[in-house]
Amino acid sequence: MYYLYIVRCADKTLYTGIAQDVKKRVAEHNMSDVGAKYTRARRPVKLVYTRRFRSRSTASRAEARVKQLSRPAKLAMIKIAKRRSLQ
Image (cartoon, rainbow, N blue to C red; front, side, top):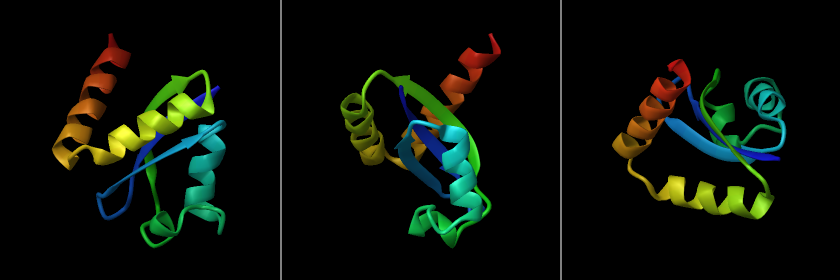
């Protein structure tokens, strides 16, 4: 399984990526040089969204689509997912 994830950086920006182990990847963003260059300068990051995919290719396509969204659209997507998880 692959996961699309979005983290909120300390400066309130959003970073989107994919990973097989989201918990490990978020830890890398927060504590290691393996984290993306973008997030290294904006630590700490907090996981705000995940979505599971069966293959890397579908997760990558979804990541590309999400990266094209505006910030308000991403925030709306996060809000909807949060509401669904609370039900």
